[in-house]
Length: 175
Image (cartoon, rainbow, N blue to C red; front, side):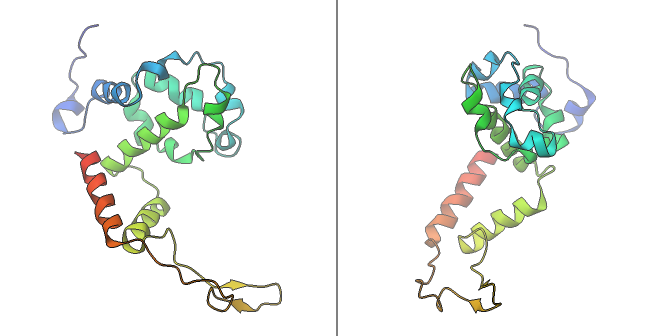
């Protein structure tokens, strides 16, 4: 297969070219994702497709065609619920959810189209070790309860090592 000519975008940015991104996907996932023959079983069971019009078979096909940049910049990969139904339904045992997760990682590394809510969750995990702070609950009678008032143990955040390890992992993946 011949080498793709460089485009103006490739020459003016440090971003990986479409070919490089596709090769990285093949390295990370193996060539199994290419055995998708678009039977649409993944899409027919997709929770996000029903609500947000995500089509896993379409994502698979776009990557096969080398249109990785378009997927990352569109933000569509963030609509996936990661319910793994696509993987369960696939007769070829292909995992669109793994591909979508990898595309999310590319998007996160580039800081491109990452939903603000996702960034808040990551920030909260780094700061506190939790996706959100423990909060009071309200009963049907509008009584407020805390963990303490319910006799539940106090939540203890992860050790400082967790945050350090997570930051190290994220910087290693970005490099």
